[in-house]
Length: 221
Image 1 (cartoon, one colour):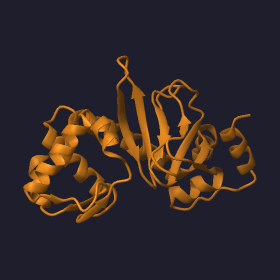
Image 2 (image 1 turned 180 degrees about the vertical axis):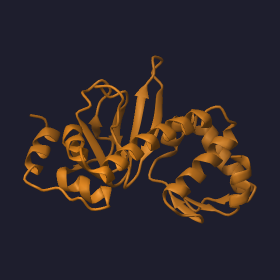
Image 3 (image 1 turned 90 degrees about the vertical axis):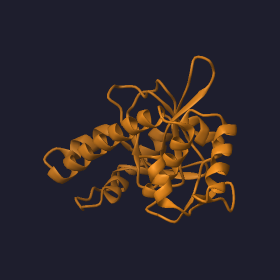
């Protein structure tokens, strides 16, 4: 029995809530697990038996390409559900970016509870649609210029953190580069250009102040 399977088995003594909060419902049927920085949550090709809800921290989904390069496909922040797959196996690997807590629950358990529960069924449909939109937006991002990609990434993170003035990035610049399909040097140079143009300020490598939201939005238009 794996660590995730054991944690899930221990969680089955809990009940299930029909409340409007998906987070609280998932926590009732799942088990909270803690992961260390860079610790794998699941690997590409493993059976997709479980879904995951980020409670704290950040998770990255990635693939190692045939030439050895890493392509980050998504970042998941608190409140995000990941592990949604069209088939029976995971198409990406996932790791904790830093220390994080994740609620782990069986797909089958959630599916059975969604039967006859229109609210939960709609929430599950929304999750699937959001994952599809995330993948589509990422594909579109990868065909833009370096400035457009970096500006779009900053705006995406601001929207997801529901902040318009300042964001604290949980991921490294290498992570960002692998997400945007750029080199780390290009990401750093582009951030410096945006800072010189007074579109952003960089008090630290992980803290970004959005000084001219309109200028960033025009780059991402």
